[in-house]
Image 1 (cartoon, rainbow, N blue to C red):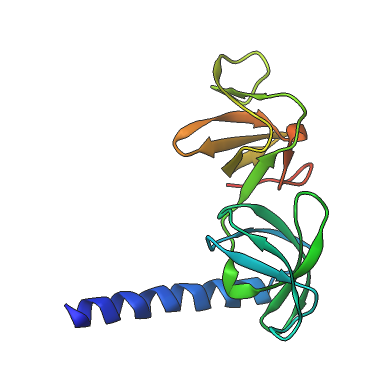
Image 2: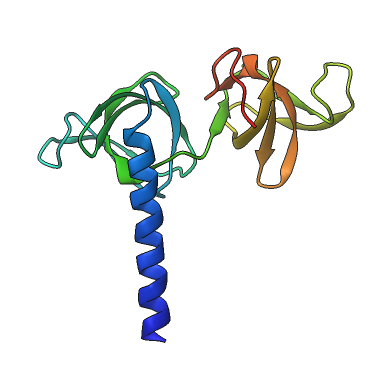
Length: 161
């Protein structure tokens, strides 16, 4: 049993290290998401700097605007900037509904496609298949295509597989 737990911990640590290594090689700015259930934003790139925010929302999208060793300067959906340890971030693409009203999740990437769901402002979901101003938006298994204009976490004209 101990061997299985140790092997699982080693595998998880390896995945985090690989994610941090991949982030280091990316050109800034780029999109990421908070991978931890609790993540502190600090005023500078070290644990000795005071924490300015405590995020308790895994999958929240952030924009990485600067890299310094194992630290990332990030911008949150409200525009707040600060530093987070890279191991708290993931490459998993997410977005948050920033429209003032609920947005339509369509069955196909077209304004004429059938309505599958609606997502309220502040809802966070995972992104995939982005092209031509539309992305597949998955909120805990409830998925559909949304126009990216109502989201924060994806750039205009961005293409995702």
